[in-house]
Image (tube, rainbow, N blue to C red; front, side):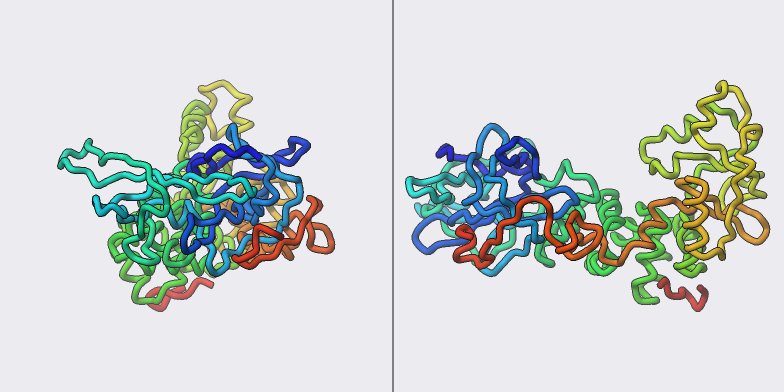
Length: 449
């Protein structure tokens, strides 16, 4: 194995390959154990494999580190990674910590960690890249940087938390679903600290990808004003699902603090049972008049913030054009719009075969409608045939899949495993102890539903 020093921050996101050159995953962290008189010993890597599952890769299974890639022996244990006592993740827990220099010249923050292989083939922390506190009040000023050995510094407080801002820098390029998965892998307190540092919009996107229990834990950590701002940024159906998990008093308080238009949509969704079309729908489809043109319809579905399923079709109604609308006339699929000139009226292109579902329709009925007609969304109307929303395929899947589908447990039938629960990728059983690891329903609001 290459003996060159490697800095951990440069390993984040690096591709991991087997000897045949096939990619097996990406590095998400480096796992170390502390020692009394020497730098921490590297025991392995946390690798994300397809399906967003994070697994442990023993450092003994790594044959090469360098040139932005890591080569393994090809033997990877696909059991879901679980951090054990004594193990520390460098990116998630060490970067950003404040230390005191042994020469008493002051304090500094760990910005990067260098690891190196010794003559015995053992990888360990060899050097730290530190930044001293800035000495100028200028917002553009940065503190002086300095290199130091691990033995030349001491942590200011045992177990001191890493800067959440520093950790977020390593997650900056992750998609919301991947960031949610990364946060779920953190210790609970660290997850809450990092979530608090996210912007309202970013946190809203992440919450939509999390299980309900973690959503509630994070929202309960926020003050009411911040929580309401985050709920404003969420899709109304996701916000309604989350508020339904809170106490009635907190849910009502947050609804009062939300933007009136957003709160009105959420309150309407809370009237429906969660296993009905009304409970699954979103209240933000694209709604146009019959006189709107193909050019106008295409311009509306071109918006970058629009979810793909919502952009697959536009709904045509009589005025008003906010749910509940005037009488629902029909839908126009974007592929049909592409076949007609820009000035063609959408009222002439309605899909005459597509029937909307009632808000009281069961989730099973909605699923059958989507499957029978190969749709990605279906319109939902009330008893007066007014459009109140649309149900998209992702909402139906989220409802039909098991509650813990995001965890991708090794025994879960949706995980890439054979009948024995073992992946087809060669599996090697490793000792999981820190010491020798490298060797081996909506509720009611104000009484209404």
